[in-house]
Length: 128
Image (tube, rainbow, N blue to C red; front, side):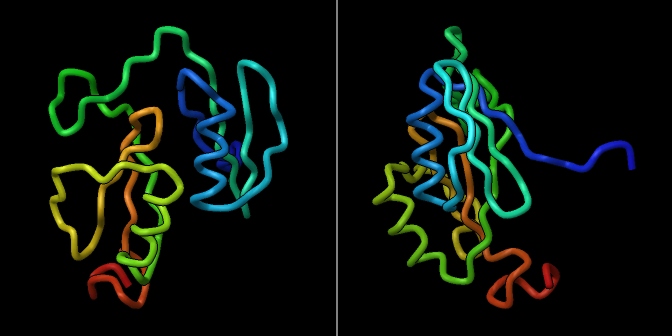
C-alpha cells in the first residue's frame, strides 16, 4: 500500500454549507474550515469540500454535465433514511433506477448521492 484512502473532495460553490449538509446526513466533525476548503471528518474517512467559482451542477441523468462522482451511504431502512436526508436539505431525483435497493438524491450543490441497502442484511443477497 502506498497511501491509505482518506476520502473524496467535492467541488462546490459554498464549502461550509455543503459540509454542514453532509454533517446532517452522516455525522462527523468539521475539522478544517476556511473560505475555500472545509473538511468533515467521519469514522475512518474524510469528506472535503472545495470552493470552485466555475462549478457547474451535474445534470444527471442527462449527461450534458457529468455527475463527476457520487457518494453512497448504507442503510437497512431506505424509507426512514430518505425522510432524514430530505429533512436535512436533499432533493430526491425523478429518476430512481432501483428504488428497492438504492435511492438517488441531490445534495444542495446538485451532486448526486445514494442511500443503499447494498451490503446490509436488508440488501440483495449478492451484496452480503
